[in-house]
Amino acid sequence: MYDMNKWQHIFKLDPNKEISDDNLEQICDSGTDAIIVGGTDHVTLDGVLHLLSRIRRYVVPVILEISNLDVITPGFDFYYIPMVMNSKDKKWMMDIHHHAVKTYGDVMDWDNVMVEGYCILNEDAKAFQLTNCTIPDEEGVLAYALMAEKMFRLPIFYIEYSGKLGDPALVKKVKQKLDHTLLFYGGGIHTAEEAKQMKENADVVIVGNSIYENFKQALTTVKAVKGEG
Image (tube, rainbow, N blue to C red; front, side):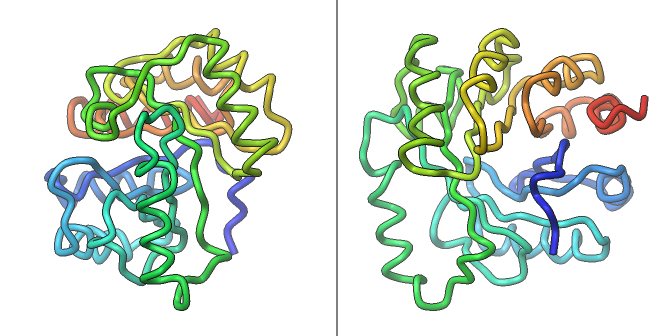
């Protein structure tokens, strides 16, 4: 069984984007702690299954981050379920989740299900717009972090800037509020230096878009985060 508490770096692959077999092999053999399969636009079951079958040639743990119920399928090591805490719609905090449990609750392996308390902080991000979010001030972000840990007892609080680099000072303040909930950071990481900077306070750094924009730079983030380069 994989110990998520020891993870430091995760690559996130979008099943709606192309990645060559050679690049996928390098990603899976890079030393990253896991691969998340997930995205916002046009994520289909066929796309998820195709990417899963390719990743399964390697030994890296693979996670499905569920963006819609149609893509839920067996075969993943973990299932991450986002709760978008700064959404203005209850739908993204509870209603979709309720429907999913009614549909799949009897067959779910609850030991492999992890709920992520998401806080999306880039108003230009597609996920921000889709989930009808609002940007909280610093005090609001810290309150969401406390809610994630103290009220909901969530295993993960995820600061998501999705496409732009976030504020390291805010990440540090959030980390200081968390004792048990893991702090994930994602957004705008393109270089080893940026990854290392965010890892100074986040428990786990997520690298996604740069895989498709500057592949060689994306690979350097693994050793930077894990103190190997």
